[in-house]
Length: 455
Image (cartoon, rainbow, N blue to C red; front, side):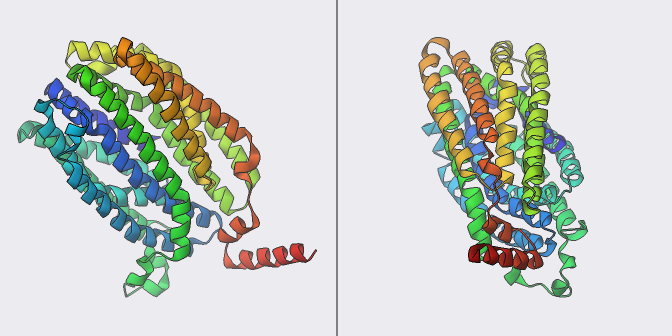
């Protein structure tokens, strides 16, 4: 939860600093924020394909294979993120035009998005290292480094925005530099200092560097794609829906864009604890799968979902009560503060059910069964939220977008709770057990499988 809140704090820091420059600067960043989430979500999904495997092998007490998975993830992640960087740089000049932005914010939005796109390889390695540490059970290091990243972000943003007077580009450079330093520290703690994951534990590597260990094996890459592809598809299509909604909001003007952006940033404080609990549930369920304990998988699942709903219900109440004060932290424009406060109070009602969908999805990721939950997310946001938005916006403006969001999140939470109540997601087949055990246990399972077939 600390790590996730730290991540959101960085976004709020950027928004607050730019908000004090003016509404135009806020709208410049808000315009491309959903596309940035799309690229960041793809990086996160790719990293999850490897870090979830780390959890499985840690649970099976096969730490050597867990370290091999990390090495392969580093190489594969760099290639994948460089491809995303190339795509981002190519589309950056055209993105504000496609989103229907006013002429006055197009140049700044393109520049901001270009800087973020160049930072994607750093973000990918950061996510892979942090995810691997969490999935191995080391929660403290990612949390502390996430908090450090916030401090660095404040320092560098102040330097670039207010000392060097670089505006929106300064916010991007400040965040980029904070990520570089934190990524280097995260990679160091994972590969050099961690008791379970440091590469020196593989004695064959002491005294020499074997680059072949970084090449992904067919089995590892296939499993990473099995886990990560549905998540990537889901993140991509969901962010595509968010981009479509941004295009709906853009004609409403800079005040609506800024209020929507600030509102989403403030709301993040409510749902990031849910994502923190979801990360923990992914680790606990993944390690339970590796240990072949489906009773623990189900127990951890319901404990996590219940905790997430309770925490986010409290956060939703606080957000509803203190909405104006929270908006005043990030904007000095009275119209933006008023509109943002009103939409935040609409969204506060959805927080408990939003928590159910967030944490349950983390449970399903840990179990390695991501296809059906991803399809559930896609259907919910495209069919329910987008349709309601198109219906409500012409008469209700930005309020219509947030009412549609509130209804959709409640619906999504209900469907995820129903899915969790079905036991199919926690079943462990003989083949899955073989893929997540040590070699001795694999031989025992193969023998048991043969006896069963003969019987």
